[in-house]
Image (cartoon, rainbow, N blue to C red; front, top):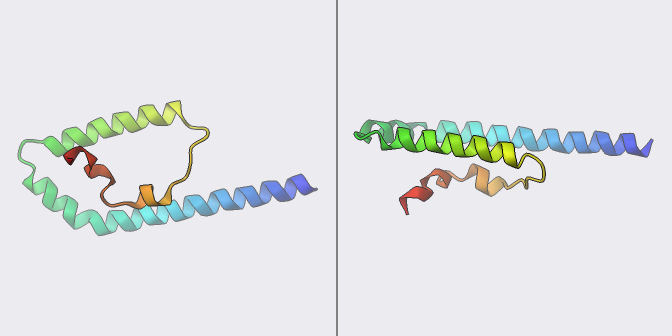
Amino acid sequence: MQTLAVDIAATFVDDAAALVTDLGRALLKFAMGPIDRIANACDIAGVLAERRATFRMWRANRGRVRREGRRFSLLGRLSPFRHLAHLT
């Protein structure tokens, strides 16, 4: 009986974390939309499209390798500047 209660609580916490993550991602996408449109309009050489493709490949490879044991970082996921690290 205790195992069932623990499983239900763990499922609730996982669902709540996924909900917060998705809502944050949607809000961030809405807030960053105008900035992305300006950046795409100013990107003459196609650098942003190339960086996005490279990032998608890197993220897919990383996700396959480390699916288990991943820590949840709310600050890292919701930071609007997380994709600008290549500029430094």
